[in-house]
Image (tube, rainbow, N blue to C red; front, side, top):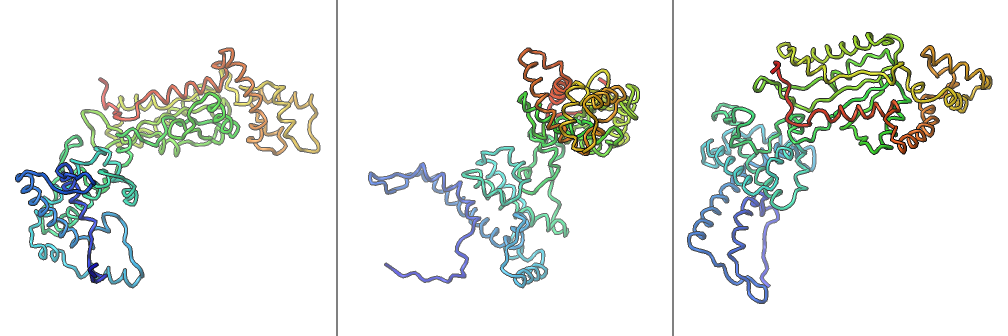
Length: 458
């Protein structure tokens, strides 16, 4: 065995050499293997051999250039810098400050356009082998450490795109210092340019996830008045095998009839539109979220007219979130369709009174009331009846127990009602089931991608 000596500080390997992997793959079909499994010859045409040698030389030049640029631009691409001590990092920053913008360009002996062309060529190479296709748009928005989870040609394509990004970041730095012309961009959302598949994050994640039908924003926000409804609704959804994830129907507690929902509406319901109209319409950056508010007919929303006035106020709040030139009648009509308000039943009863008899409420509240002095069964029944007629609150009979505990006490009663009515085919008559059916209908009413709002009636 021959001893081989080497210096451990010598630069032996660069990950940028993975640029040659697609070329190496083309060698495989040309290899011939002997019976014992050893490669014994390469059968290739002279034309292929000439092309492969020339291509290898071109790629080697790119690897050398990337190795020179790596200390400056690789950390910016992968958004990470590794160092063993603060002193080492300070030395690195000091070196960066001393490095002139043209120093590497002069050392490489190339013109700025060579960097731009090299970046575009590597992106073309990555596009040719990348099985991800347009999904690269999602990948580039992810943390770079997640890129290493890719396998096979998808990972190789990312390695190649990293090389392209290093060249293009250097070119952009030169352009910023007026040493090169700005990098040309494709004009129009639907036009492709030579740099569209680069790894530089583009932002606008809402629009991107919407385009891929991956938006995490809920299809519907279902607002209920209190903790009892908030505790029971998800159980009813599970009973009927309805999705309970937040990106389908998000159940929110209004915290009482007097609470202002403007902040929730401005964040969750108001459409997010692009900066430019497209074909007379507003393209949405994220799919529309609808609002279904279930109100108790009491206090400031005791009448149907008062509830409609509040709903119109929410619509105004949504319109005010849009630029003034987009607040057309057609847009108002579309926004009006996003917001719906109703009560549990025609009487406008609270959740408890709409779903449970006086006797059921008497039993449940008595079970929770831990006061030493509390009304007897007859008096409790009279109080429940009076509260039902006046729209009062059952809190006065709970002895300090929470509405969540009341929900726990009432759920087995409601569950039995659901089981019986479901077996008879009459579950849709129960207010909470009727409301859930409407919520599902609204959640499915608008598509989750490629949604626009027309600026004018058509």
